[in-house]
Image (cartoon, rainbow, N blue to C red):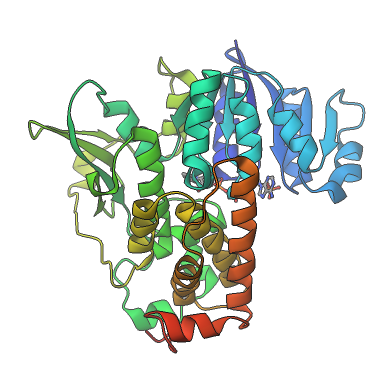
Length: 399
Ligand code: NDP
């Protein structure tokens, strides 16, 4: 039996993970589940899986969690520190599925245990790729990618062969074929309506701006040790080919499957073996045609922002990620327009550059500074930077 922790068990990836765990009670001993606020679902999962500990990050939910789990024998805790401590409880396999840079500290705590860390939380790698890589070397922990693209590459990556490039496929999101005026007027409901995948709100908006693919370029660079120019993006609306690796001889290896996150999650759960999943069999005859197109860097400027952050290196990806988290939240709350997300990101990236920081404290300080700058940009206090210093001058939305 493999002992398990699921960080972010109430989210989209978390629920798919719990689904697989519930189907295989003989194979997994689930010890810890965590959520932010969703006490009801967390308590239900905790009872179903008979876990030892359930934690909510939001301290205000402690009494509620305690009351719904009263008499169950399940230990409950709340707050940031409790979350990090729960992530540090030794287990063999941890799912890191908290959304955003808030997942960094718990993920590092799990890495310190030296087990297998299945990483869905790409933002933690984007913020602290070098720190995480160094920590893995020290603790002997194994990082397995859950993102379907990186999981695909991981499945076909032959480390002893010369890689010419990798190709990350992208569905293109809900605005793949939309013109800029449609994008400028896009509502949060339209932006989160992903044509293929059902995901949490933040990653759905990231898919719509293609910042998700930008973050994935950075994630891939850290996971596979590749430079920015060896990572291509190809729009593939059917999301059947999950990504590809091209080797020196011109051979291209790809992983295919139905778009169901339980496939990559199961790969990491059973690794180095495989386990059965309820995912549908891939029926290529029914799909009939697979199509491909180049990404449009003009309508989706976040792709180039991410490439530029990766080329700059250091804390540039962390700054871009923090700005993007703030901008996406502001968009979801109706404070800014859809195209403003890229404008805010560009503004913060241009203004802050890449100050040096190598340890966790330094990275968190820079993350906080980038969030302050993004917030000030959004609330209008630093539009001066935007108006004078870069290409989004005066009309970020109308473009
Ligand atoms: P969701 O928004 O659906 O879920 C996020 C999870 O994190 C929830 O359990 C949520 O708890 C918890 N959470 C949110 N904020 C905090 C916080 N401040 N502290 C602690 N826990 C918190 O996200 P997804 O499942 O869609 O995505 C999770 C991660 O996986 C993201 O990094 C995303 O990019 C990545 N990913 C997702 C894919 C998908 O198919 N969804 C595919 C590939 C990668 P609560 O429910 O209580 O709010």
